[in-house]
Length: 244
Length: 244
Image (tube, rainbow over all chains, first blue to last red; front, side, top):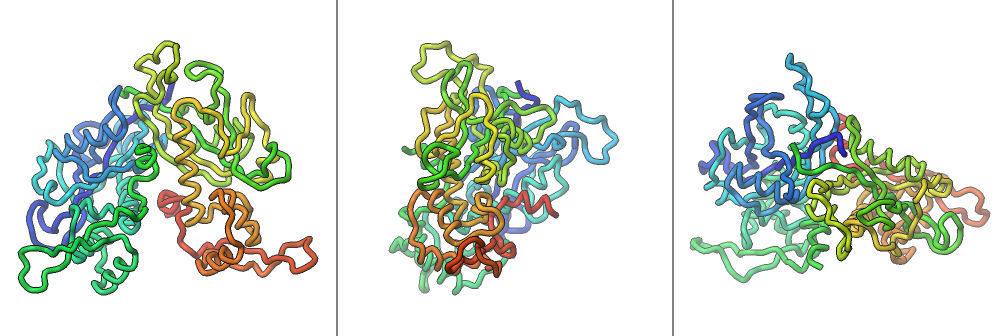
């Protein structure tokens, strides 16, 4: 019926300190796991984790299963990014001396993006041929995966400003400094603490839990949570429609 | 390789006066063309126009070709909406006495949404088994197409407020009253003219062309255009990345 086969891939973001993944110290940044390809085309190159869609598998289910196989993690946040279907995208490597891909090889990829929490990512079981890379220092990727990662980063950067997704990195309660750190890592720039506090407080998206961070003796900072009464673009309308 | 076949469908919106499509008079509202199914499952029901993806066809190209076949029109605006892939979505009609669909029948639909201009829609050649319906008074649809239309309406309503897509209904220049009429039709509610003017002027998204609407003798209204220097979410980052 169709001239294309279907795959589901996932861009997985974790927020980690710089230096070697899994070690503390340094500023925090975005990291993502990639899988080294063990066959042509693009053998030896790094690619987004993913695979063909199983017969009775939902799209989000396939993305979740990829995440589990690659990192041993469950997503804190998962959203469909885009379907990529350029007829040239699955072909041979540009400039490669290899055989051109057969015409039946065109793959349409439905791509998801996922956020995983710090603690989980730290304890993640890493699959074979999998390695974590900093999002701002990726190797050359297979297929059109550089474009896909760039799009996923754009979506994440936009979405952190008009949704509650930062809590996927933080848990349910957090200090303003912790939230600002997430924004800084996602946006890739430092933010003025006083301005950040003013803007966040004016937006009404947070509520004070009445509690403070424990283990801090002098002026322990307040803990906040996202205000669930505010209508934000968390999961798009499909989440909302599904709850009807 | 994959347990699913792939189709591309398109939700096509035109802005038309109420009453019979193609006639003038009454308030303007959103209309969309549907195709009556001539085979099972859901034979006789109305469905979104679409079809299987051709072997060397891009996804947006397939959506454009569906639009041309259904209405004879080229889109003024076209954007990918979502990929729908629930394993149950392509199966037999709920409560139908017909045979269950074979397990190989699962279809993943990559859905686009398109806007077409008034004048074009008025002159549209309508394909066989095609009819235009008001978006707020649709018949029962095949498959999960009601969910898809609901999502497309949600996306359109959101996007009209933070993009230039209203100009797809209006052309390059328009009066504030014409723009307000588009907002009212899309949002499905009347807007206070003075408030609308204040908010639009404060947003900085419009610029005064220095011209006025011709054919109006007393106080002809000014013509505006969208300010291209303002960064709006018109085509998502993929449009932007493609221009690099």
